Amino acid sequence: MKRIHYGTLITMSMIGAISADAKADSLQDAIKGGTFSGGLRNTLELATQSDAAGAGALNNAKVLGSALTLDYLTGSYYGFKVGVGSETGYDWKIQDNDTLTTSGGENDHRVTVNTTNLYRAFLDYRFRKEITNTHIRIGRQGIVSPLLMNSGIYPMKDSFDAAVLENKDIQNTLLRVMYVTKWNMRYGDDNNGSLTQTSKSYHHPVVSLYLNNKSINGLNIEAQWLANHNDKNAGDPPIAVTAKDYDTSFLGLTYKVLDTNWVVGAKTLSANFENSANTGYWGALVKNTFNGIGVQLAYTSVQDAASFPGTLGHVPMFRAYNPGLQGEYFAGLKTTSIAANYGFHIPGFKTTIGYTSWQQSAQGIKHSRGTDLDGGYEASLRVDYKSQDIKGLSALMQLSYIDYNQNVPKDSLTVLRTSVNYQF
Image (cartoon, rainbow, N blue to C red; front, side, top):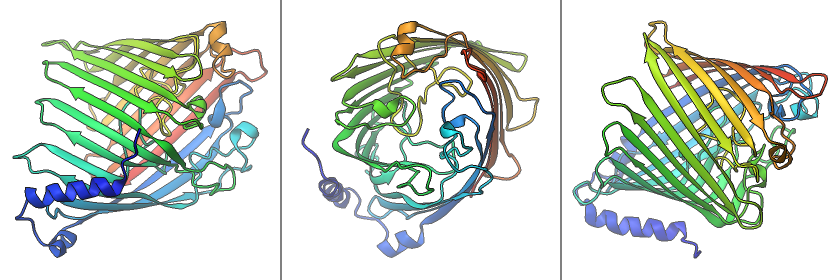
């Protein structure tokens, strides 16, 4: 594929802008009319020690990290806006051992990042709506989609150097084209001394197409295709670290039965690799609300040949159906889950309890880098709160007990993860 340089795209957009809006304000007014925003993000993670394969970075974690983000977006000038943003992470050093949890220490490097990053730096152009409901963003930015997204779970965020074109000309339809040349990792380049993981520049840019349609009353359709034709590892542990030279696809359907509280959903995903076995998985869910209590039942099944490569970015699988922390994308894994939520009539408050059980084939265990979840289960509690009195204040608490059902001395794991964030 011939590479399109950012400069070419910017020049094309400028030509369209000059002809599209000759009545824009002055550049000085656009700068003065810009807006500042930011946030303070804090995450505490505590976990017991486990000998089970698959416990990963959560194993024995004892960490507290924070991050401060500062963002500025100019006002519109001939349809253009410029955005920049920085983030600074801080490790509160509550761990006794700074080595990774998987090496017997207490440090989960996803929380304890000490660095300052330029995580936003983009040029945004919005065409006149009389011509087309389209805008393009070029540069360093966040992206959220089922197969490609930056993480928002931990204090620091990753980002992408990309060109993203969005169009809404078709009624009730969003079309998005993504052209990614680099993944900027929140870890930086061994910035906290515990992990060496540099940002990844793509020799062959990652290309993705996304569609969201709501034309049929009650039905939400999502579809995405992504091509990652690079010959070096392009992802994040536990499984996407080996993901290279592949195409993935996603189709998700969610239907709210009219005049009822019933919601049904289904998804199917596939991954076609150039030099290894293809794989994929499917899932279904049904949910309803009874006297203010929401109940959901879900099931997913992954092919034996290989694990699904997941969502590209620091998010193993964005469109998971199960309510817990453990992933559902490992080879040969069948996941059955039930969840119930209730708000206790408190505005902005929701509590969700869940139970997830696993069955995994012998071939699946063999092809999933040794991850063995067969016969295991996870019991989880999640509490979400968004303050109605203090704008921008939110909190999240996740508590999980995972029994891996493995023949090791400590085959279970208990995890507590709490985040308190303030956006201003």
